[in-house]
Image 1 (spheres, one colour):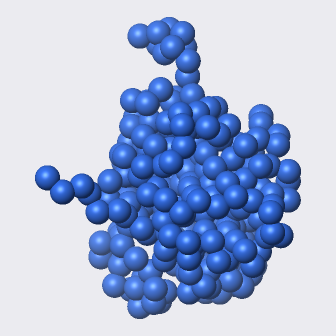
Image 2: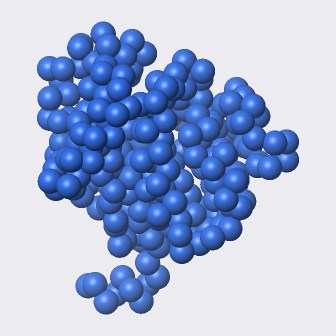
Image 3: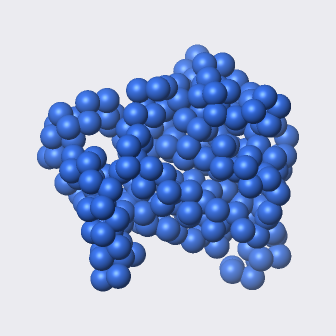
Length: 249
């Protein structure tokens, strides 16, 4: 049997074309909300050794470096470091080109593993979660699209989304609890979610109004709509030692 073909969705997300999806006032708002969730989850480990898997998009690595975290970025190909090299001073981070589903690091090599804009585009996503958990000593932080949201309309509305955004791709939508359940198989529990936006991101991109995005999402959050129906989700899961797992049985 031939070995599985390496999956490289981060080559696309590391490109300048993809970066333009997060340009302008609305794009900056998207990244602001995402970063706030990530740094809330990182609060227990200031200055931690962090592996950013598929992070060539440079959405979080520069902020990690700025806040004193020791950052390594894993990308599928050397081209995935180009935006990082432009955004960060030489020597401020490490980069490794590798198979993201077979990371070249020993178990528990990093305090925390972060992976954004990746899981939804990986076919063998269970293998990815296994690797993220394997190399993390304390926690894994990742994002994904949840079915309990406007993503219920993903199929019928995808042609419109494609027409509006141009370079959008198909993506996986996960059932509530599906990612946490898979992580639990690898000794990770205590899942905490941050649902990011009530309205679909394509709506915000279409309207191109930072004020509308901020006001509408603030109102949605106040009404509890985001908490129940928001997507994408930023999820934090933490390693549970054997004693903790035994107590749950």
